[in-house]
Image (cartoon, rainbow, N blue to C red; front, side, top):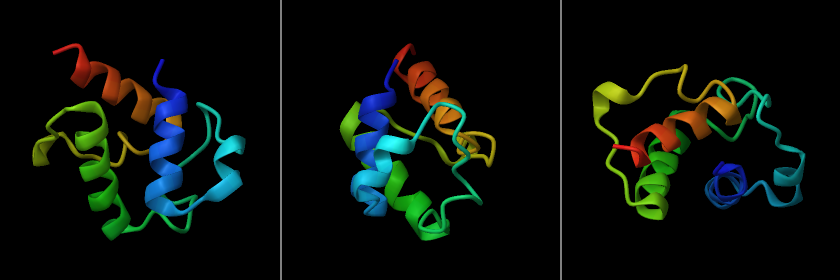
Length: 82
């Protein structure tokens, strides 16, 4: 649903360049992309809030949200549906 936009946000925040084109819904994120460390997660959340006009509360952040591109997509979709 929002996969292309999420790929662009990830590429911008993590400086992935053309590697973003290899991201699929099942692509593991947290723990698999070296650039996605704890500080990058903070920056990524800020970028998601800005790009999608959402607010992410601290208690909504979990490893499962950032497990795969698909799980991140599902999270954003659920926030936009609220």
